[in-house]
Image 1 (cartoon, rainbow, N blue to C red):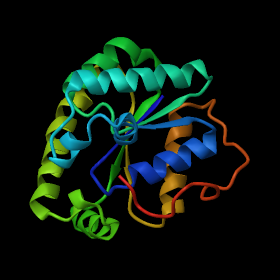
Image 2 (cartoon, rainbow, N blue to C red):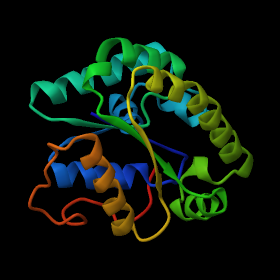
Image 3 (cartoon, rainbow, N blue to C red):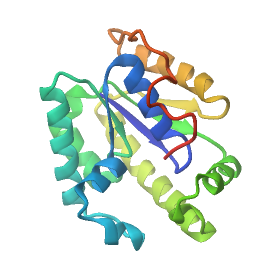
Length: 197
């Protein structure tokens, strides 16, 4: 299991999908999982956060389903905060190969988000709030991972999408030497050539 962290616009979604395609793993995005339930649309529209207990229940179900089907997992956007991280550590720390933080300068993130066209990406103050929440949360999450000896890598998320993917592949193989790439085109199939979450 790999955990993928990054600010909005850092490319977590794009890179998570690319890695899942390359290694034959299951990409589990907390945002996608929440949208699929169809139960939280109003809360999301208002810019509010889904309760931790609900997020944990949704992601637990997704992770266990993937494992039952024989897939390793790439977590995108989960755990979101210390509460969720503590739960994940208590239930699955032995399954986590490592965590990756995609690092992109904020100036570039603003540019990427403005091109994405989503409603929650249009307001500068809204973006700033999301950035601040992420930064506050990651400060609490990383020590928890370190306390369980889970390796953490920071990866430069700037450049061509394929170049960033190659950097990530190198880190994934360090975390999990048994990880082997499938015979497929990194950006073939359904992998978007655009910056996502």
